[in-house]
Image (cartoon, rainbow, N blue to C red; front, side):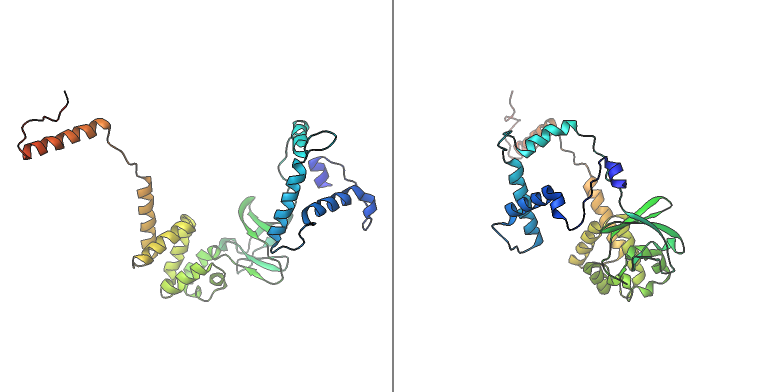
Length: 282
């Protein structure tokens, strides 16, 4: 009812397992399935099968109809002028409230998701979609993450625990949060921060302040030049790169170039005792 009221259509229901009651729909599916997959039944990936389907739909939509001598694309383009204005997508997510436990986790559909550690013992609002969940606090959107398909699994974001890790930096090495970061971050920690985990926290803050790509580029530059991979060195490299990129290169004017050339030629003439500036054009 919400969907029909929002988009303005009247639903018409049929009985399940009664294909004859919606023959037009069933027949349309059969036609496009035959057009798309009659010549090839097996595909290497699902993406290949989807691509074959899209190509079949494209062929059917551009084909001229016998009666109107118009393609489906042309007819639909003419009908667009009479359509109602497009509305924003209807929010069909399920909304629930979850209390953050002492580990900064929320329990959603038999799985655990981390939230920022300043929300411990507070309530957040969770919008559950088909493949994603969105977290809100005090009517403000915090973040979105992929929904876990399973039971009793954990999805931990190490950025959510920066405040906690500053108090207990020694716990980073064996934490579940570190195990769920990208392999590159794990490698950086084990190679450069095992004896100084507190500096790794500032390294993660740099990713928050700038971006993962900028921090990664600066880190790889330091490693390549055999320089210390510390948070302070990385920050300096990022700032220097930004300074260079924002510099405005000013080119001399044509008159300045001509004057400089004249001065150089005058000096050359003097060196070789060729007299005055005989090269000048009157």
